[in-house]
Image (cartoon, rainbow, N blue to C red; front, side):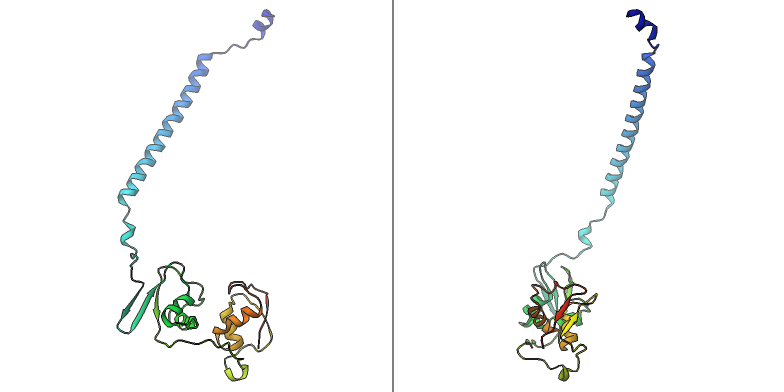
Length: 195
């Protein structure tokens, strides 16, 4: 058996193999150290030369609204929506439309924390859903049917304006269709319009 091993034994130079492996490892180690050192310098430079961002953004103040000459402004707080803001200032959420128009807000659901709103000088609006609204008398009604198919970009306020001439009546449509929130509509949904 020993003769068989001697006959088929490969002649290897183990020193060469070990030297090649060690040189590869040393090269990898050296390259890794260069990369880590470079990243360390770049990170250090970044933090030393980055401006203080707190100076660029307004600080939150304890006062939520301010009153200048004839103009009242309000800074939107976390969790606010236009309905709540209208209730704070006018005692009625139905003034949402006035606030939205003055501040060029197309979708009353899209306001952001920190946004400054100008409050219009208007009187509190009352709900108009106590009685039926006559489509003929309003003159602003664009849709007179009993069923409305939601289109892309529609929201309940806009649909109420089209159907009643008054966006404040969006709750009538929501109640009639058992909608839990004003965001519960989607393109293609057929809504019953109470008359």
